[in-house]
Image (cartoon, rainbow, N blue to C red; front, side, top):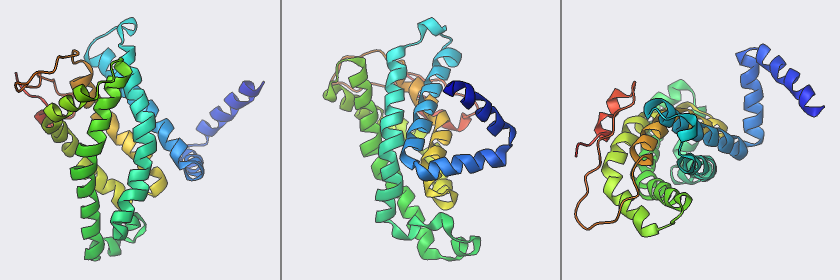
Length: 244
């Protein structure tokens, strides 16, 4: 009975148009920002990996690597949706307070307030040069190892060190401009959903680069990342493809 009443309500909401949908979404995101971000990030990450496996890698549905998809799904919900909310809306604004309300400033103030602009650049630089390479990526690789069954931290950190340069190449192409837009124009309660939307493409690249890797044995000699085709239309991310 409850489901029967919810379906017409959902259809009615869709019929109201994009403005009404945005208003409803804004109300939900404002009331439950962490939960809203976790749902958006989790759905996005699972969809991205399934897209890579079925479209790029040409797998049938019964051939989909479920452990790999679960890895990205858990990472999306727990880290991208939960922890990243604290990083983007609590930690970074506390470190760069002049940038914390930059999105709410007038266009004139954004252009002419040089101290706030410097703070915005510092915030984005902190996210890119500290949070991403030394927190985000290690957590990504450790999550992958845990879900696959071994949970070997040494193996995860070895993969992180080996792949950090191509991973950061892919990251900076997308996230430097994206984070500038995010912190300059997007309200706080929509920052994580905005990241989820933008990172759909980045997650597909990272999933394709790392998700299909065989469980390799740690060796002492340098290992060159295998060639990873670039997913169109992200031709600018050609730096993520390293030749053997």
